[in-house]
Length: 297
Image (cartoon, rainbow, N blue to C red; front, top):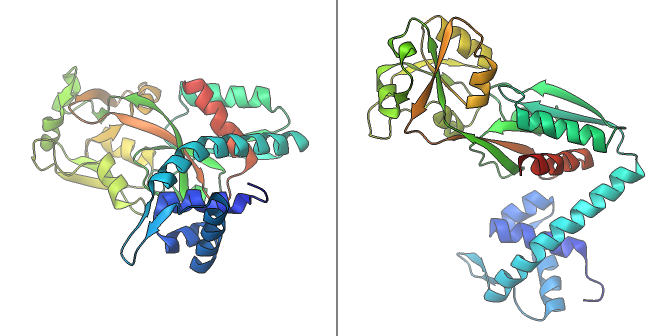
């Protein structure tokens, strides 16, 4: 293994995820030919192919699968060690900007406290992420990381940890017939206009927050679309529609007397996850991800 290059290992890991030389090159900011060159160098050191390449597909060989299983945890541990050393060398100073959607729940609050105790030289800031643009602030480097509602299918973002699995809740006007119920079923959503999320949120993400059909296939009437959580809650309070929320956000806003919050049975649970840039995640963001992972178990 003499002369092993970290760039070769990074190339292997990215290509193992993408299984496409062009996309791997885009993520690594190198040409497709450079990806091939780095892979050939690594395979030469190992002495056998790690990928099967044809004109139609790229896939791992059995040796490649085994190598990936051993390399990934070792690489992540090494990266964490380097990040910690860099942070210690700088006193982990600077600023960590944490975005969030909805509300700062107990998990996030405990992670911030742990991070603050561990890195007192680092100033942390909180910024609410617009409901209609869950990933934009991270991409534009307005925040270093963000806690957002799942699903997340963005190739340029790292997701994790994932936490706070809870039943979804329907925010509705106290004037609505559902307000007096202890719970509603997913099929009941066909009887209320569901407030949606406007672009630039991806279509798959919009649909997850405001499904167009019930699990049984009944059409769910589309209500107004909003850019922010407050807009949605205001419309729901005015009886202009109903809005699906994660439990922690519903609990945070439960003192609002013009709204009722009713659990929904039969929908997938809501989940929160931390996202950060794949290409330029900061040492502070990586340290915060570890703190969050520790607090959520």
